[in-house]
Image (tube, rainbow, N blue to C red; front, side):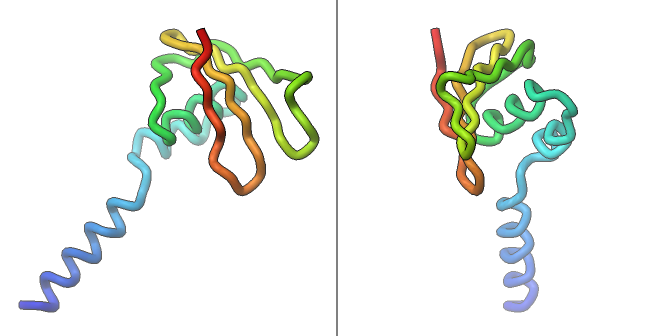
Length: 92
């Protein structure tokens, strides 16, 4: 009986660590706005429909890309660096 419970707990832990199926499907987007929208959704922000993504060349550096993402419900500044979570700031 303990083995059965342990396998269920292990299975739930593995499933709990996986991103939702919808987010996994959105990671396959071809355009920058689709990829950025998927990134911010995975980090808990809402983007109903990604409309446009523009790279901010003044704030970007070779090791840090800064984008402005326009969604149907909000605008975000997304800073991406290798091997780190994106820094996201909602704009007015």
